[in-house]
Each structure stands twice: as C-alpha cells, then as structure tokens.
Image 1 (cartoon, rainbow, N blue to C red):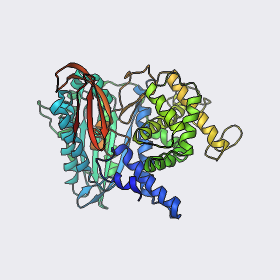
Image 2 (cartoon, rainbow, N blue to C red):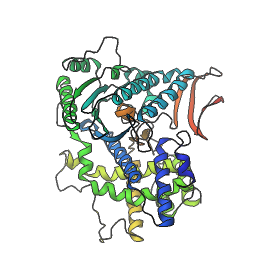
Image 3 (tube, rainbow, N blue to C red):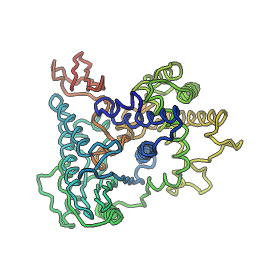
Image 4 (cartoon, one colour):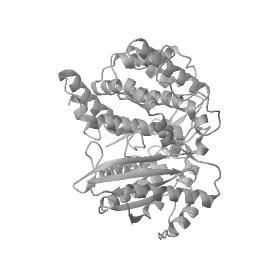
Length: 476
C-alpha cells in the first residue's frame, strides 16, 4: 500500500468520504506497478458507496420525490463480536467518533445539540445490534428532527435531513454477518409511529421526542429476508394510517433496472478518481472531464466549483478538495442521466420515452472505449450537468446536498441519510459529522457576535471552525 493509502487507515487523517477512495487508489497503484490484480473488496465497497449515493440523490429529485421510496441493505462482517466496516473498524466505534465530534461542536454551538443527542442514540443502537444472537433482528425507527429543522433549518438541511423517517433493522446471521437495512418513509409523525410500534408490542413513553425515538427499539427472531418483509409491512402500515394515496416506487429497483448505466460510468471515472486521490497527482481522465465541463454551458455553476474545475483542468496536483468536488460532479451528471427514464418508470410518460441509457452512441462506439468513446462520454456528462444547472436542480448527496448551481441555495433538503443504519455511517455516501460543512450560528462562542456565518473544514486531520466575525478555533 502506498503512502496516502497507508495514511487513510488513520481515521482522523481523511474523512471517511475520501478514505475508501484513497485505499482503493493504493491498491490500483500496486496493480499497475507489479501487475498483481487488486483485491475486489475495496472496488466493491467504492461501487456500493457510489450506487448508494445515486439512489439517495434520485430519491430527492423535486419532480418525483413524493412518489419515491428508498431501500438500502449492507452486509458487515462480525469480528470479535462487533460488526465491521470495510476497513475493519468496528461500526460502533465509527458511530462513537461521530457522537464525540457532535458533542464537541455542541459545547460551543448549541445548534449542534440535537445532532449530538441523535448520535448518542445511534451509538446505543449499534451496541444493541452487536449484542444480538445469531437469528435475532433489531428494529428501530429514526424520526426527522422536526424542531431542529424549524429552528436551525439551514444547518440540518446541510447535514442531510428532510421530512422523512427511516425504518432500520440489524439482522445477525449464523454465518457471522450483520445485515443492516434501511427503508425510507415519506413523512415523520411521532404519534403515528408511537401507535404503530405499540401495536407491535413496543411501548414508547410520552417523554420520547423526535431525537430520542430511535432508542425504543425492539427485537424479533427472523432471517434478513423476513426482516425485509417486516420493514416493508411497517412502511405500508404507516402510509395507510396517514392516508397516503397513490402508488409508491422504489429507487432501489429503478437503479437495478439500469445497472449497466451505473456500472459503465463507475468504470469510466472512479478508478482514475481513486488513483488521483491516492497519489495526489492529476491524470488524463480527470483533466479531460474538467476541460469538457468548462467548455459546456455552465454559467450557473457555483464560482467555487468552477475554480476547482479550472485547477483540475490545468494543474498537476490533485488534493482532498479536488477529490470531493470531482466526485460530486460525477454523481450529479450520472443522476441527471438516470432521471431521464423516471417519467416512464413512474407511469407519467409513454413507454416509448427515451430510457436513461443506451450503452452505445449513435455511431456504435462504446462510451468506455478509448479515444473518441471517452470524449463522447465526457460530452454527455457535461451536457447532463448543463441541463441540471439550467433547471436549478440539486440533490441530496455527501453530505446533505449536491449543489452545483449558484441559484439553488438550499431549496431542496438532503436525503435523510443521517437516519439510515448506523446513523448513515455505513457508507461514504452518507452523512459523516467529520465532513466539511457551513451554517449560520446563532452566536459566536468567542466574541458573542450574533448570526455568524460559520465554516467547518478539516485541516491536517483536525476540525477547523472559522466565523465571519473573524474568530477561529481548531478542535482535536
């Protein structure tokens, strides 16, 4: 494993959103150097993260979100009694890191207190999941932080929340795995969920609120497949109680129908993105994509995104920020391609409507072929970005939103991924409180100025907070 990949094993050196890419890039570098095929584990992990992010982004499409539901399921190996992430770290430890980070922020910024409470609940659930016996399943329901969204709307939207609840389950199997499932529910009413759980034998006390509701979990004996059925039954029961009408459609099923699309774009861009992230050196694929984007009609692109594209198109280096931006742009372009078939999928267009993808261009050249094929793919991706910008579309992403347009500021919420299994920390596409973010704090803890624009970034593995008032602080 090369330098950056080794560093990525230190959890505070990179955010988890980049660590998997860096580790995979290290394996690819070894493969290229000595011809030894890289293990498939990290490739599969990065693909799963990418596909999960696409599902979550599509779920927030403003035109279709009121008809779409999301399902996510991941396998975690159990080692020494604890479910593990792909890099071997215990999931309960990852959740605990998030809780400690939120608590540090909450000590200075009261806006973060609801998130710290929620992270503590996620840690409790992760611990209970590890305590399961083979054949047992733990169920929990994560509600939307309604009051936090009312009082601190910008921050909590950027953290990834919107008006959703999630049914989570953790199924321990006899073969040493933890299957973690998450089912989105379009709405989040505490009293409806309280009554629903009571009918299933789990009483939720009156003092429970939207931040602590998840702690009132219950266990059943079931297989993962039976757990899927129970989660679907709970979601259907909730919709019936709330009087939700109209057919619901699965984003997960939709992406499965377009597996070739998803795989083709991943194969075209992600290995090169991983190699650049690991080596710190730009490459032809990233440069070519950036150049093509800049040549397209991207006048509505955020200035900071455009500056990054200019740098990637011209510079030899490739840093953490470049990695984050290029991944966001790639995902945005792929989602714009995928959404082209959504009207047909939900029955709002004739079946003759163009589908999300044709694996070849009109001249029959495969899009992943060298030369003209890759150039054609870049043009298609750039056109997708341009179309999305002109329409002002933003999507939930990593973390919170993928906003490329300077006119779409926080109009749409995030995806609700902080409410999925393990507090969304089962994949890099989901919420990570150690990620960069920006919000308006009620008061600076240093000079006590009011309504301060606050930017949180990672500097040499530490969290650096800087306010528009001029104050700054670095947290270990």
